[in-house]
Image (cartoon, rainbow, N blue to C red):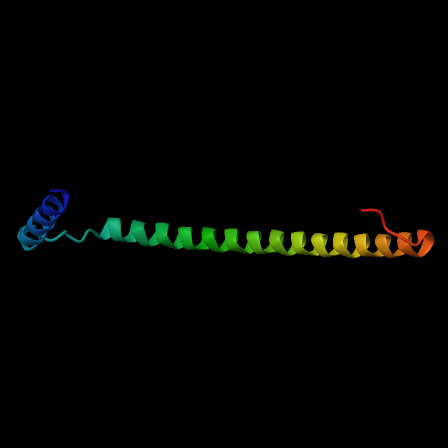
Length: 85
């Protein structure tokens, strides 16, 4: 029943599609959409750049932490002969 209803709805939509009048071009709306689209693209670029910058900083901090932990572990092992778990 559900599939039949979906099929009937799609068939009606496809049949009524050509009967709908085309949208009228409006110069003001077109210009506004271009400006908004450009603003959104610039904003997305700024967000991506900021995200990549933060990600790079976090990766550097993680590698520094890992390097320091390894150095501490090696030093502790040299002094005490073991490293506690």
